[in-house]
Image (cartoon, rainbow, N blue to C red; front, side, top):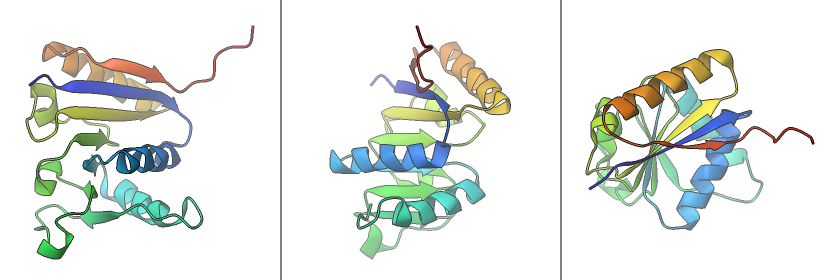
Length: 152
């Protein structure tokens, strides 16, 4: 199985963008795991409850090493410090600055990886480094720039 890697770059509001991306994935029936720094996952957890009035995106927070409770096993979106803890998923979304070792080498548990890169110099540089790591692993990532087109 070939791993698909998509970079969404130049994102002005990283967590707001991620909320919209997760809503779209959930509506299309995808199982998703989101990984990143614990503080970002905690904030995303809060935003998924409040970013759209009257709308709920089913998700659960999973801390490193925590087992999934059987009653939550069918939850479509997991916010996980360690993506492997969430089990097989359709999509892995990375909010963190480091490349995911299992993703760079390919993983049957998540056939698609989405890298979210904010429009900030440090984030852009970390994103370029992850891009190089995917290329070095023989993958062909695609870029989806979120920067507005220059005025003509």
